Image 1 (spheres, rainbow, N blue to C red):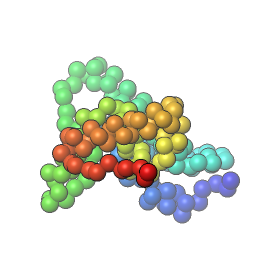
Image 2 (cartoon, helix red, strand yellow):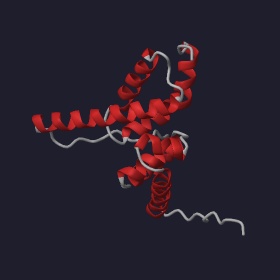
Image 3 (cartoon, one colour):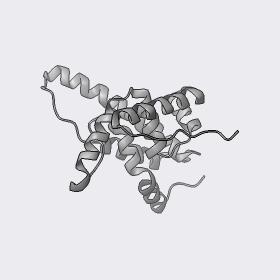
Image 4 (cartoon, helix red, strand yellow):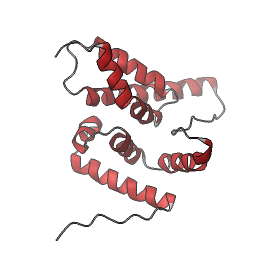
Length: 167
């Protein structure tokens, strides 16, 4: 595989940038920095990874978790007071309430459910890619995804018809 060209990197950023930031935001306070570091690492890879999107999610996940651990240690050392986190979703004035409600609902999920939902819905990753990313089985990822969606429906008061299998 040839080295990444600037146009390739631009397309990757357009396609996955926002989802990667959202994915990292569940662990750390500086998701944009984590994504930028991952992109720098990607450019330095020789040869580039076969599955670039999967590789990016893995690097972003690991860096975000490391960043969170560092921040936690720093917070303990400095005995910092609680702080307000960045919202996960950008919103306009008209839908501000919905974005806040969605952020709270997503944040209330178990970490496994949230990770899978963000990777699947905003990242566009397959269940197989998420299983590889998280080091679990595809069936476990599928179970976390569906239980997380059900929990979101309950928290947001959304009534959705269940997909029925044809007989």
